Length: 155
Image (cartoon, rainbow, N blue to C red; front, side, top):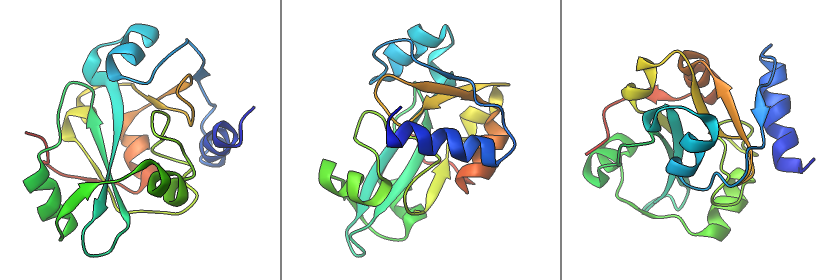
């Protein structure tokens, strides 16, 4: 088991959640993950990371699979202009590689916001630290575990 997957499992277990982690195959995209989980596209939690122009640190937006982040709204929430976070920064600040960034189990905390659309479901699916693993969780538990603020930031 990879270190990344182990961190996600430990975060779930530490919160008293019996992990429902699956390895259904390639889940790099929301469409692939939805097909693998057998769920609606919007039940997939996309971990979208940006880099703060002033701070140089990552900002995490947990977005429903069919939604897109609006750069202006996201920047307003973050309190600074946001740009692309490159692979090296993502790995350095989250401990995950792009394509498998989990919303929990990060190696260091970062400001996080959640799309209210996710709260419309009983269960959502998120990356479990690798591009091939996903986990199921109640969205309210995900918001609490990730420390996310629910806010409108989609286009």
